[in-house]
Amino acid sequence: MIWSRKPSLGPLLYNLSAVMLGSDDFNDLAILPRLTIGPHIRTIKLGYLEDSFSWANLTAILRKAVPTNLSSFILTGVASWSEAESLELLLTLRGAKTLDTNYMFLTSRAISLIATFPALEDLKFSVTEQEMKDRNPSMVGNSFQTITHLAIRSDTDNACQLMLMKIQSRTCRSLELRRTSHDSWNVEKLFLALHACSMASSLERLHVCNLQWGYKSFNIDSRALKHLHSFEQLRDLSVEPSSVDLCDNDLLEFAKSLPQLRSLVFLEDYVLNNQPNCTFIGMQHVIQFCPNLQKLAICVDAREIPIFATQLDGEYPVGFHLTTLDPRNSPIWDACGVASYLIVLFPALKTFWTAYSDGTMDLEEGQVDIYGAIWLEAEGLLKHTFTSQTQW
Image 1: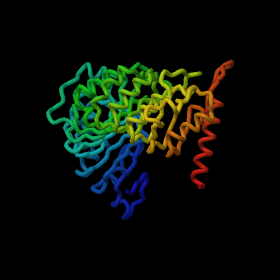
Image 2: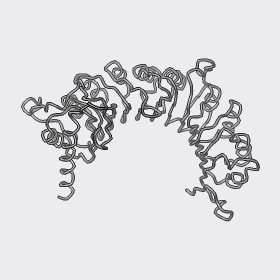
Image 3: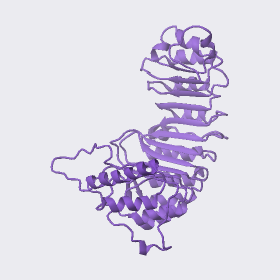
């Protein structure tokens, strides 16, 4: 793929497969995009956008020059636009396989238009709850028939639920739901919506996250997880930042329902002297019933290590494929004991970090984190083991 930001005139100009342009390029005569956007272009990226960006110039150029086999159209910047401008632009992109409108909020009419794109596989867009409530038209027949990767950015979980119920995709394998406001989201309702709209049966990756740090955590409890039993193909589940309220039995039922998991990330925000309800026993349940697990991030009470004599099968379960572990700021007393225990459970472990690994904990005056130094000691022991194994 050949990229160009400011190409020179010559033979290279006619062999460009991808181009990245910005606001200034579309001013007045828009000479640069007129020269670069042609029949060989497969990917167009637009960044550095300003409110004065000329959507009319962009649409006019695409109408004249955009190839019928354009693969990707991606907005990396944000500028104001009207519904009419968005609809005119989208009409020129009907053949795209990848469409990312970034945080440019789309109207329901624009989304209904995108739903008819015959080759669209990867879609990322933003929508507000108010727009969905005000207009909310039904999708046309055969909506999103080829979609495999979907990312919805929204201010509320209600907007996401409305969109999911309308999309009703049975081909989507990867779904990202990203919160763009400080409003609380109900993860249980989101998982229920996925179950109700039949998307759960095809999903391999589900990621719920925030636009930026500082927003509220997503609450994860047993009621939220009970809807995951129908996610038969799920390989990758990530909720961050999360506030987890689970016990060992909850993790047992969860692990039994998702045996194909390869990555489980409940990335909890730092909580001073955290006291989770689940223990290493719950972690062992996940290892036992998710044998393909490669990455795990979860807080557990690490102050008590399960005794060998209490193991039901006379042995600890082993996560042979797990290479990445993050216990966040789990409570801990014995650095050496925990490091030894984790080496037994995860013989292939290569990457280990905690909430303390980057040394950025910013405590208020008078606050003392009683677990930080212990985890740093455990981390040092584990990394020494990794180094020794590599050298051996």
